[in-house]
Length: 336
Image (cartoon, rainbow, N blue to C red):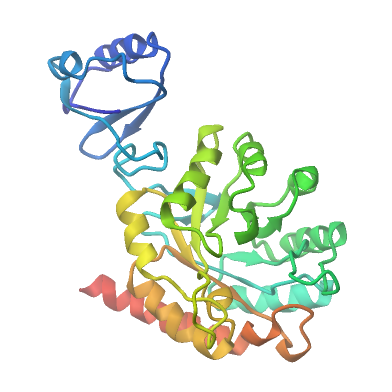
């Protein structure tokens, strides 16, 4: 249920209303917008009389939310959520960010080389996989704890906040100094992991599953938010279809739909979506044009010899060209 209050409602009256609502056993969430204050109710609201609430002097309107996702719902939080990743680095609500780096952490030299290059090109968050989910058990699985150590050392040297994927709840202590925790496509519906991530105060980048619809993605976000952690970033990374010329099919309509349904930031990963470096630039531009809040792009200093996903990785020079093109597009869109 959503209760919109009239402008200039005294704080005392608002708090009395909240106290009365919570006496019904529901949780309340207050969203202070530029023009309106919204109170969202989570829990069993069937016993609450909407007509009674609607008749109160301070209430503008009362709406029941039919969608099963509540906290992720834009009706619950009308304004775009802005998520602070680090000092001076935010995403959402007009803050566009490049997240760049290799698929897998391979060495300190590799990470520092790539980090310095993408930072010069405008990336404000460094990605790198320490734990890598692979289809084959014989493929490179990542450096694990050593990979985390290298990422943290690169963060110390370059000042870039880091994002890396978590595979198991048991690994969570290793992520204490990681700035953003990524939940990969294969773990999008690992509900026990999502509930655990809901108990920490750290941004979570949640990737859409290979065969999941947008409602399921938002319900997975709801698992995290219901636990108390509302710092969730959604990521469209392509879905599996009948097409074989690309690794996946990049669903850019998801960006527009998610922005309509939810207040959470939406990032697009054109690298995993297409699986080919030559398609990253056009898809990055398309993602920016349709309103994405950021791009997550794989960059490797030596793609032909990468231990993971070399064919879809850009060189630092290629990333620089893509970043320049995207920035020009965003500037042009702002001018309109």
